[in-house]
Image 1 (cartoon, one colour):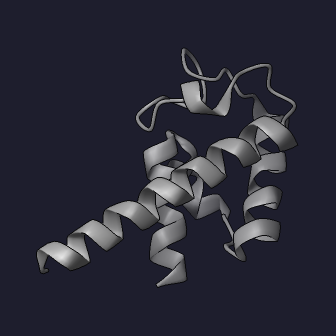
Image 2 (image 1 turned 135 degrees about the horizontal axis):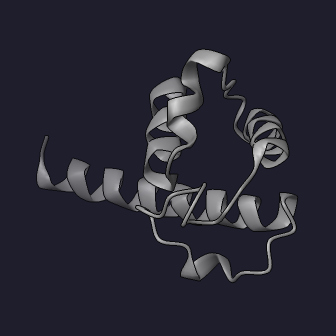
Length: 93
């Protein structure tokens, strides 16, 4: 991968991260600034403290927004924002 390709990939990932963070806050009515959500932050437990209802809502929001389905086998992709970003990018490739 060339430097230009790496830079473009990083810029796309950053843009996707901002979009997903905003989606999380808006669709789940979280009382947090999207900019404060870390890319490695867990979505459950000590992280954003999402619950099972939030999981369903998030999966539907990702499908509606990005056309990416999260199946029962893909639930590991919801453990952190980075894993979710990886899943979205892999499915869109």
